[in-house]
Length: 70
Image (tube, rainbow, N blue to C red):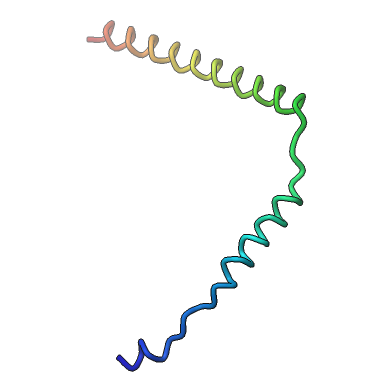
């Protein structure tokens, strides 16, 4: 019990300073413009579709290869 009595609670100002710091950090962020977001979105979609097609093609080849062997 002596250990619990020796600990003090953290002051509530820590939460306020955390949120102040968070707001200051968000103000430092350089957000991309619409054109950049559009280009990056298109690149991600194109890569996702290409990777999906590659995986589907490999799956078909493996499936037919295994059925041919067995």
